[in-house]
Image (cartoon, rainbow, N blue to C red; front, side):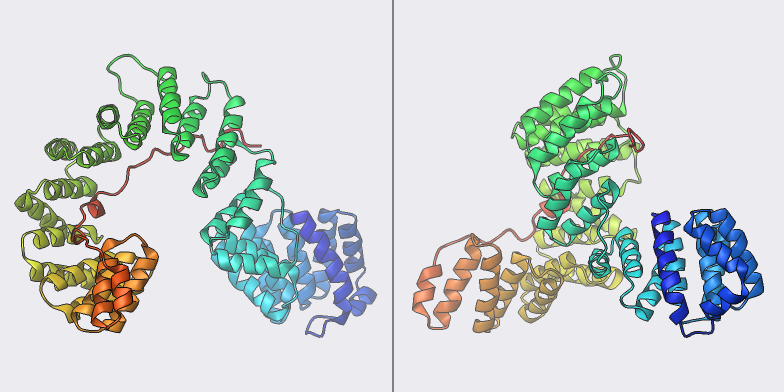
Length: 539
């Protein structure tokens, strides 16, 4: 890439040099007076950078105020790996001629190669401002933004560059990640199709499979993982077996995931009674797969094994207690968390899970004590406040719940869950106007949340704002077409508005949605990570 840039800049330099109107010395004047400059150009053309550097150094001594000579000497220094000297030359060129666009571009390129993204961005932005048609400046600014995961700006700059994008695995993986983040799934699929036809390192194969799984291209992802497994012997690379099992889990093939993980366990089996991280990860994977297959007892047994193999790792205990709570086995969940806290008393996640287990079991006094402890300790997340508010709502203390959440917002800023639960608390406290304000804030923070629109509409209806209520409830129904409560409330709103036809259309009985879903405090399973060694099989 560097050699390509140098040759391109050489052509640009020779063609453009004579037409530049700047404090730099004109090229024809240099050519008449500096044999060193001419010899440097010849050496550069012949790809003799060391000789070119010697000649340009001599030319610079003759013309120390020539910004272009300094910029070009910087290119040669960079090619020879003398980055600090190269940067100094570019910066001096910029000082001598603040309008010398190629010095900004060269400095930005150098900083990009050093992975100094912030210091690369500024000179490249200056370069494209001075020369909006400079394709190289746009291209490398795009690469900087891609590395910084500023994907919208990255693709804009790359498109403005009109440069062909490299068909390299590393670049395509970055680009695909960006396309997925922006929802450009067709572009992502095209990049992934290119990637599956390229030679990939082990780590790149895992990245490609993970990207395919993230957009539900499960069959191609499994194909990538099967291909990866074929080039490794099971005895020497057990990680490849595990990663294949994990791919099947993430693809939703739970039976096959279990089967592959059990085979992996046989491969890494140690003497009875010994513990291993490998065994913990495998049993965790198996337990998650059984949970998805609705085989609760087998899931619990597998997750107990995982927790026993790695007692110091809280995610295995969290997976176990999640499944126990899913099966309404709350006393067992409480006991399991208490055991984990005895070994790891400072674990935030385990304290939170203990509060959630007490809440789900209806042991409100114990739950309140746990959540108040988290809040008093300065919980950096909304979760402890939400848990405490749920306890207070369950025990008829709605106004205090609203106060707790108002305090949380002061400390943590505006968060969707804080606004949403505060709205529920205020509605329960018979303060519909304040509840509406909280729900409207929740809608602003998450416009695609059906429950926020539903409760906003319900508050509008309570306040007699029928048309506004209908608009919010229609939006809730658009986001969640099967929501029975939205239909029931819409029927009532249309009836009050005198629209009998729509009132009849949406009329159907429904029960109130539970105010405080414990699931907000539980979360999903902690899925094991890929085991591929970072430098494994690099091509």
